[in-house]
Image (tube, rainbow, N blue to C red; front, top):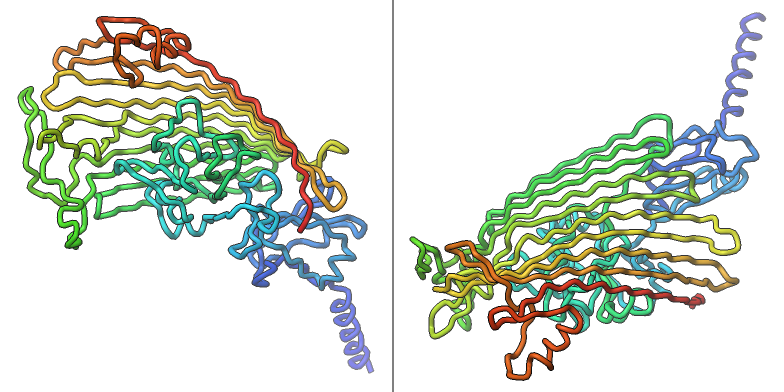
Length: 531
């Protein structure tokens, strides 16, 4: 009798434990139904915060029955659910991806809405997985994978062309900050390589006019580059991540190394990224077209020997002498996560290069012989400081707002010397750019109102001089191209240059030491309805 009673009690106990145990709640990926690790789950006040493990599970029992749970992951659409709604979904919370490779892709580079179905322009996206798989040498190569034609006057270059427009008619945007400045000219520009392809989380490309959103320099299209973002832990424990890579290529003897480290606390997150690339002279392929048997061959080059320019025969014609260069990139970010409705990010970006030879000019001939002994771009330096604040609690003024303050310090130079000349022409431009951008959006019934304002201040300093490579002496020279005539003192380009910048005559040449400030203010209001 006692044994029977003990057996009955055991059965009842196990039954009560089985029925009393709560069904585990898991977070899954909507399209694959795979577990989603690393998703954050918290209540409205962020008093209780959990993070899903490798199986997508978390401690569901910590949350009171009446609370609303917020499910958040930076790569997925955020959801807010009550415990009743969670039970109706059979305790499996499916999160939709933020971006897709289908036609319903979310375009993060578009200021007015992000659903491709609502965007009239053709768009293209290069994802983090594509970047990691393709390993682009520069951002110019990355853009080519996004269906953008890129022109290169030299190996260290990349001038994107979109819908027949290039240079200052297409816009480069880095982390929400326009890179185009007052010295972007009409000819091909190589500034896209200043964006480190190894630090990009994604790139969005908008083809066709984007002037309503970004201003008149977006006539051909917009290229939006998004660097890695630091992620806070939102938990009491610290989250540390690190990765590194190296790359070697035989075609140009490329040696590249880089790394990323992330450090996440409950409210703060830090990220550092660096890369260094050493590109040797490019080697052309062996298979040649019968129509162009000399294509890619470098038969001769100019070398300075004993103070004299000498034309030297290239023993290895497949090696394109004077194409190599080096480039260094640094990215640092600090992010403060106040709550799901307010966060701020500070970023510092620095990039510099060595001298970059202008290969097409070094190949030019005059009277059957090479024309230039030197033609190169000096180090292209960019230092950017940016502060972005994102808010999602604006009351009756906005539903979402993003405000960005930025400063860019940019320097570039050009240097050329003809063969058998002892003088080298040096031109240098320094640009300081301060910008403020505010983008706001608010739901109005079935439509949505987008509005914002942008102000950009360019402070340009330009100088030019002629340097004697033997004595080192220098004198001021013409910093802008001109046509000489007996009337150029009072009219034409130099009349305008004198009025705008203050040009003076020195030894029969126009010496230009230019300082110019330019302020642009733009505003936009767009009302969008679903189609």
